[in-house]
Image (cartoon, rainbow, N blue to C red; front, side):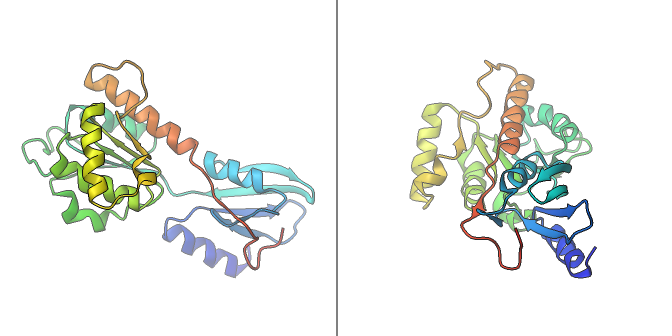
Length: 240
């Protein structure tokens, strides 16, 4: 591998950026494609978008010959606001599904190690530790406290920072009031429309465990179907 390409790959991974290394099987020059940097005239644009979403490496056919796509996508994160019963049920399932999990709740009666074993649990106000979380578009946010004093800040900033999924617990009436507050806080109509509320797939879930399944299923759906943006023009220095 070209040393400059290797440096670029390592830098992208360190910054939690998604990239694909394109390697011609016949030994031609490799190239590195960044998600969001797919040129509209790239002959394998559809394949690149498909594999950014699937996160799976694979061999593909192209007009210039067979290519191997080595996919590097950051592991998805799940930030849950609220150390509640739903969170207790969701935590082990999220880990099994491959999510890096963090649970935040300033209420120390709920955020206890005895209730959440082997979990990154922060008994803090979200606004006090938000910067250290470094949420990004590979992060899902689920607000489950039903308390605007705790939920509203992460909801606003999760939307502003482009989380691939933002969901909030509560009825439609509760969500209407939430929309009013977030609108007054300066969140755009387009961003507000991205909130999944009531949270979770409509499975008719009743118990905390069933709701946890519905929420995690919706998060996985959003992760696997997330949009991959393409540039109008090829990235400088990238050959088609």
